[in-house]
Length: 236
Image (cartoon, rainbow, N blue to C red; front, side, top):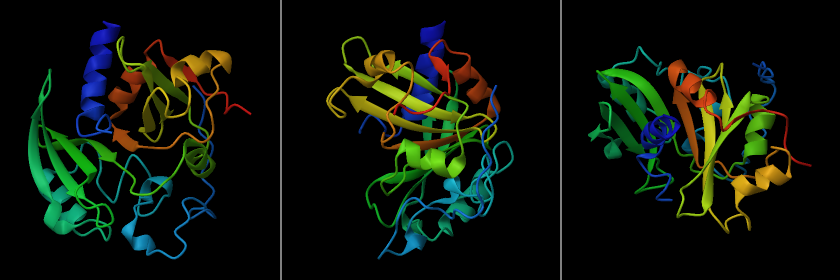
């Protein structure tokens, strides 16, 4: 049962590229807009930091796209108008998953042509998840400094034959995760094995590869897994 749930979750979360590659969260400091990332010398309008801030709306809302409410047509209009999106790159794609069919509005960022940076997914024509691939460098500790402490994290080895690790920080109220997937060697060690040595505390500088905003039932499914760990901070 665990393997089945995990396979469905990972297929939903990772289908568009990451492998091609009860605590209260702390309040966000409104004075941070944000400290991270640093866009010195660059046009900040070409980078999406909305998931780090409460502007224009706090997660689980993203640029006024609201889970369970926003339609495909409204999402296409809203995403096309975002300053960091290449409007010509938008496309609607249907994906068949084990349990259902998903329609996705995919878009590329102007600063990362040729790569999907936003994936708004719909089931029965209603928005059920948003995936964002940041087109800038940002790490787990930088996100935590901005967003406040997560409730916990989920981890899993990539597979029996593939040495590596997948990790997601989870903010339950925000219905959001930030995630990283590695082959052994990226951080000079197997990260899942490393957790045993650090009493379940993560390294601070893990890079964020994908941001996921999902329905509350998906979050509940993740935190019910045996490999969900309540947050106790980063390793020192």
